[in-house]
Amino acid sequence: MLNAINISHVFVADQDKALGRDILLEKPGPPAMDDAAARQVRELVAKGASGFTIGFTTNDCRKTYQALLAKGVEFTQEPVEQPYGIDIGIRDPFGNHIRIVQLKAAS
Image (cartoon, rainbow, N blue to C red):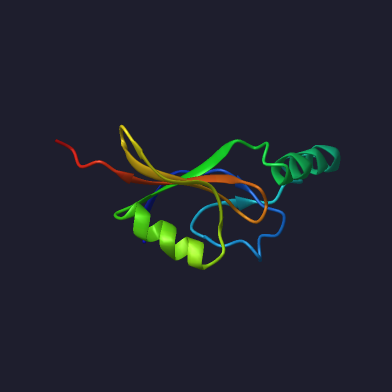
């Protein structure tokens, strides 16, 4: 389904609920930030204001889309042809924006 991570930075509210332990799933708080800043980050992430957080690649974007759709994943964009390939957008349960792309073959 997914081949690789090409960018990563993901804040989550509950590391035990989150998937993907091969990447840093950072819980906002000490030592990186104080409690007030952590509270602000959690509120922004929940609103979807964190912007793009992580990108994955896949060999078949439409198949990945169908598999994730069947699991109830929230999509922000269905598969779209782009100059670089086909990509989709999703939001994780915490509000993070994630992209999945099927890159065009090099010519």
